[in-house]
Length: 145
Image 1 (spheres, helix red, strand yellow):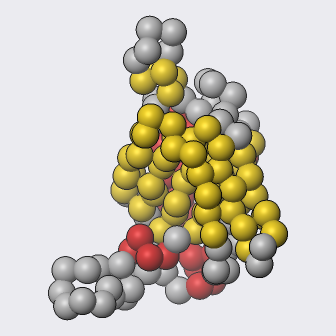
Image 2 (tube, rainbow, N blue to C red; image 1 turned 135 degrees about the vertical axis):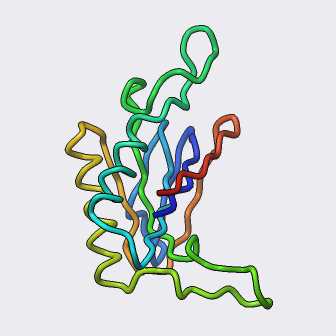
C-alpha cells in the first residue's frame, strides 16, 4: 500500500464536473493499493495517516497529527501509484490490485479512519477524477507498507 499525504489548506475532488468530496484544512491522501495488500496493511496505513505528526505546534515544530488539529482527510484512490517505471517508457501496472479487492481495501481504510474519529471525504473508486488542492507548506510525504 502506498499513500501520498499532502498537508492542505483545502482540497476537493470532482467527477463529471460535480464535487464528490471536499475538505478544508487537513490531509489529501492519494492511496494506491497493491495486489498483495491485506486488511492488516489497510489498518496500519489508516493508523499512520491519523497519527502522523505533520502539523505544527505552538513552537512551529511538526508535532501534531491531523486528529489533534481537528483536520479532515480527503482519501482518493490512485492505482497509478503502483506503477513501475523502471523499464521502457510506459508504466507497468502489474503490481496494482484488481478492482474489487482494491475497492474493498480502499473502503476499509476510509472506514478505519472514520472509526478513529476523523472526518473523511472520498473520491469515487475507479472513476476519472480531477483533484484540486492548496498544499500547505508544502508538506508532502510518501507512506509505504
